[in-house]
Every structure is written in C-alpha cells, then in structure tokens.
Image (cartoon, rainbow, N blue to C red; front, side, top):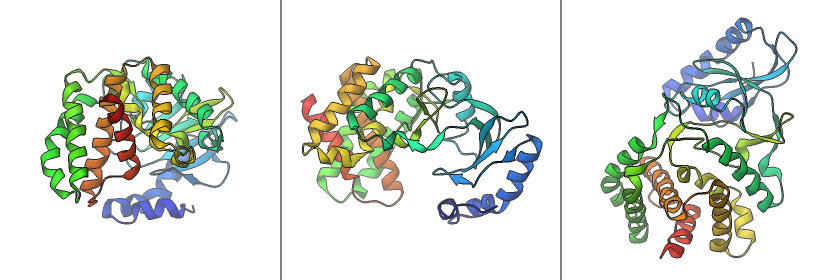
Length: 299
C-alpha cells in the first residue's frame, strides 16, 4: 500500500507515529479481510488518518478510515452513533483505530463553494442540527477542559513575547471564567470547518471528522470563523466580515451572543495554549482579529 506522503510526514516524527505507520499496511489488510471489503481506488488521507475507498460485500460503496486512537478521536464512534447520520456521515462499522463510513464526495468540500455567505449558511444549518442532540455518556466534557485551560493560563502567559498578546490571553481566560460554571451538555463536533463538510448523495452536504465533546454550542463556532480567511480579507473590513459570520451562526443556532462570545474566546484561549505548548511565542493573528472583533462589540 502506498501511504500518502502527507500522512507519513505527520507521523514520522515520533516513535509512536513511526510504529503506527509501520503497522498500517498489515492493519489495513486485516480489517479489509475481516469486514469483507474490496479497495476501490487510491488511498487518501485526512489530517491524521488513512482513508481507503472500498466496496462492501453487498456492493455498496464506503470508505475505511484508519487512525491511531487518541483522546480526541476515541469518542468519534459514540458521537456518530448518537447523530445517526442526521447532518453527518453515517457510521457503518467500527473498532478501535478503524471506522467504516458511508462514502461522500471528497472532491467537493464546502470550501469549494465560492459564495462565502452561502457556505456559512450551509455550515450553520448543519451545526444547528448537530448541537440539537444531547451528548451521550462517554464523551469528554467542556467543563473539565475549560477548568484545565484556566489552570494553565498563568504558566503560559509569560511565554508570549508581546504585552498585547499576554493581555488578550488573560482577557479570554476572564471570559471563560464567567461561563465555566454552565458549560453545557450538547453534543459538539469540535472541528466543523468548511473542509470538514463534503457533498453527498443522501443529503447535499454532510459533516465529517467529529471530535465529540459535551458542552455549550458557542464553543463550536470558531472553526467557521477562522477558516476560509481569504474570503474574510477580501471584504476589506475584517471585523465586519467576522461579525457577519458570527451573527449568522448565532442566529441559526439561536444562541445568546454574549455567552457565544465568551465561549468563542474560550476557543481562542484553547488554541493559544496549544500553540504555546508547541513553542510558539505569539498568538495566531487571525484568531487575534476574531477576538478583537467580538470584544470591541461587547464593550
């Protein structure tokens, strides 16, 4: 099997990653045999998984997704079962490290839609359907993640070079502190951006690659705000474009905007803490722009 170069590049840096890559051909062959699948095209990949187009024994098309089991993706089958195909790719079978999914059109992601407003409306409608489902047992809780983030702020702030970035980090933490006591119980996707929505036959568009989380829907908005950033810049008015997307999302999901602002700042905080952990000394400029657009209106 030819493993895509992008996937090899993602995993060759660590011993665990190299071990997974080395075992991948054998693992794929084993799952294909046990599940009665026939490969039906060249392999593809997501950010962290091998994706094989396959045909099942009954002749239906599907995709086999193989990935290392991590804390983020371990609950994906739980979330997919809870959604049961409503706005999201349907789960056909699974075991640790492998999921059999209905086949969508990977050549037509939502990011290919030129009209930014239309693309955002599609994503908002899907997200509203996903977060309408209560989180089942077995998925991570935003309350736990948010409290852990707040504990990390004091240690992370000194790693940022600029006083403005340190101040924004603390402002985001303060916003989270105001809402952490009511962190919510909805089933969140956690990564619903425009490349994680694909064209389909069963519905025009379906979400893929969830990392299920139990929490407030406001925590799910940032991926829709900071992806397709070229479309935001093209408007010539970044704050206005950010707020247009944010308002469309919050209106479609019927969210309180102050709470949604706080949890979106919480998502900026989470990404900032991850960046600091990876050795970054400055905040992501796109997320800084989003944070300031929301904060300026709040004040």
